[in-house]
Image 1 (cartoon, one colour):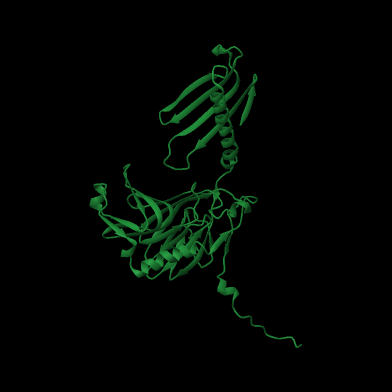
Image 2 (cartoon, rainbow, N blue to C red; image 1 turned 45 degrees about the horizontal axis):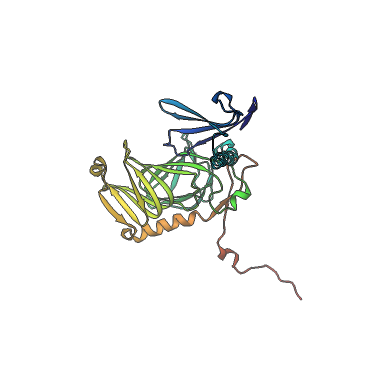
Length: 340
């Protein structure tokens, strides 16, 4: 935003971290024009003002630098800094102006009996190819049941038998067709899941670096930056395996964390959690064959769906299933033939 007043031109740039744990924002104001109070001959100067906000309030710092008192190199440096901030304003202002909408998801496949309830406790269908509104949804699988979901940000969720997962929040910015051509997630999203019991695999190979994917656990929290993670809860503790990519585990009520990168994993028991330590280091090679197939299926589910652009509609994006190449290679059967 630019404001002209008494011959002064001011530009304001505001950036705010998308990390939910971030607690501060930075605002910079640069004025170029007349600053007679600093006694320069012509009065030309650059006036910098910065304000930092935090929990305890804010502090402000102002600095006026006379253009005449500076060397040409310093003046060019100041002009370059001003141009950089104006460019940042041009890039980020449209992004911040967009509102976050509720995202969508689709059931790519399932087996056995599964059921779901929305935020109001109403039963929701989980049939194959069912389109869902994930925010507030709680999913249950019984014995010998599996379900695979793909979200509109490209993240897939695979639930094993006797598992319970709740989607506590899911919002996403609208995107257009040009954004989809980038190869990564075409938008910026905020997805929060809660694993209550059982085993899940989450794959996010196309997640935007600006997006956030967090999985709340009975104790602690996990953030998946990119890749695929397998999470299990059983009597021996919490098992986290980075099947692909990397993740961060945050201990409950503490600033301590564990960074895990594929093909490694960790096990955290009740006792080691109190000491803020890992009970055991594991690896992908230690997974059973069924668990490997489970992670691979989660990765495949994220590639089976694309979502239509929704910037013009401001509605949750509609999913479109991608058919396998073998579908188009099937022989054509016709009930009749034309005679030559």
